Image (cartoon, rainbow, N blue to C red; front, side, top):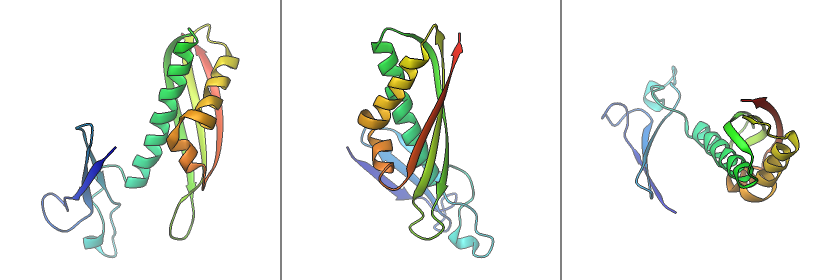
Length: 149
């Protein structure tokens, strides 16, 4: 796996904190920093997600992918899956994630709660590389609800 991240600055200038990531699979992702009122040249323009937000989103995508795949392989009629992630970060550098809660909402036809609980556990414990990696610094908790389609 590979990725190249390039500083773009602010709208083509060499100030600001905009970045473009080009992934090995041929996709691009834009990231930006938060504005800095005290030193505008060191801040971003709030035009894209922050890198740490992107990291959190990647973990959500990784685990949601697993949950859907596990449920489908179990022949469950899953129609939707979302995961809301809420994270706390350390107060000092490096400001790693210290707590992450993942709340899953799975929609489907007669999908048993036990199957959803098992799929989340399998993703969290075995398959989702992102959450396993983040679990080295953060306490990760999960919760879920199942909605009938």
